[in-house]
Image 1 (cartoon, rainbow, N blue to C red):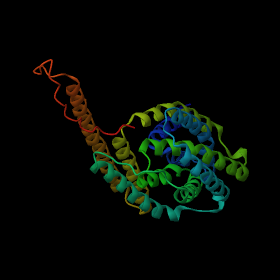
Image 2: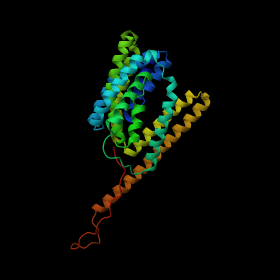
Image 3: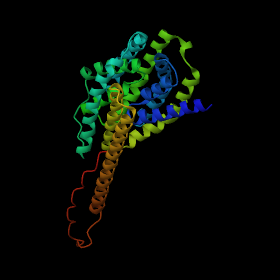
Image 4: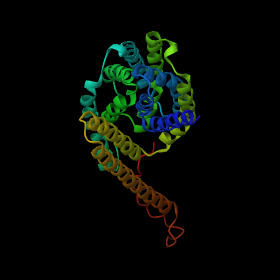
Length: 321
């Protein structure tokens, strides 16, 4: 019973991170399942079948809250599904371990770029337009393939790329990628069922993962919708840096004690960055609110016949998601 509860809590926590920051469910859940003894293919199959429920709930919540760009969704979901089906059908005979350090290095660089961008610029200006098919089709194919073969990876591959592209607000990136992930998970699940059969699944693991994720999905979507754009960008950028740094440290076989110290410092720095940006946002919002109140209050020294003096323009507040 305790084991089932722990798996459900892991599903809840993984979906909270994935649904609010755009990545983490598959990687976190697969790591847990492999740690308790499941084979990589069986773990990935269980996670993707559980994600059919969690991504459906997450997609519904994100669409309802306006976090989804439907045109981008259409362009990336189908390539993602194709990549996921291909990855699922070849997982048993393919090892992607050798490619992980290289992929993590690239993603780490993207994460640092996203983090620095949102820390440095208090007013974030998005580029006009939407990402085109030249970016979205190959990104979807690679993201879906990595997701199926690695037990997770759709968010870590697609979210940083679209954040760096700069044409979508962070909440729209997260909401759109979470919604597309339903089709990716469906295609991967079909591939795994064809390759492994339903007997390879452990329902004592699958059901708790699903229940925990279903509970967390609407909460995470609401967090995404309400977080200001700059805080969201720093949170996502920090998560990209932390997760890929961990992958690189493990690939380089760094001593566990040194790994722990390095990760503790990274997480502390990430938390500090989010805190600083949050304080800056609150101050900017307070200044904007005070300026608005001043502009709305007529001057007590002005005569009734004379026109009110022009109010000073309000300071630009931080973008809200």
